[in-house]
Length: 229
Image (cartoon, rainbow, N blue to C red; front, side, top):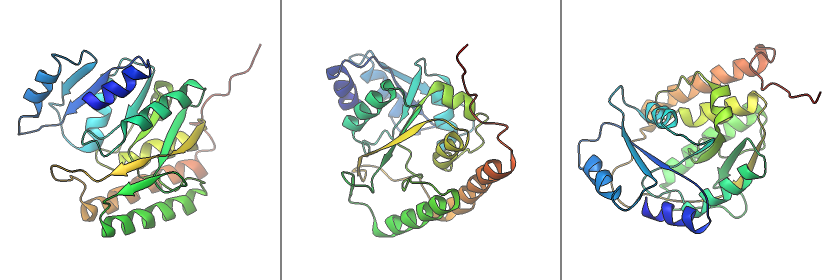
């Protein structure tokens, strides 16, 4: 939190940092309260409803006050300097900014080999199915204007499959997007919550759901095209 706040402040970026405590049983909430004493931009919130990665993200988005949101992991696996890149591109007029760890200039550090293999397989499947020039759809670290979030609602994924629901819906519904290289580092503390065996069918469900929208909705949910009068 401190590193992220420092990067945004040094770049004169107005911001708030909404941190979602999604039913933690450790000292997370107490630590966040202590951090608030010297991080005025920090806004911790507690999700007292049903838990899950997707539910935590949508809960945090509902409590955000800005006109755009950058979704980041709180374990510093995502680089705060890349968040600055995202903000600059949103300021240029893009609706969405997607980071990729697997294009020139991007990279991963300490990525477990099995998870890396599964990641590349899943992303190849999605890229082929949707005919996309995007090779890191499953990465959660992305930026959206709030208008995009509203245009993609209702969000139905309660778990990590939200990481594919949001970008695929945004693309299918006609919002503008661009890709930048980013760096990802495996978490140094704690235990990852993503369980590949449990998530496979959930990812497939969301991918199939958005694919059906793309080819059978006849554009009913596409972003309205503004026309000058």
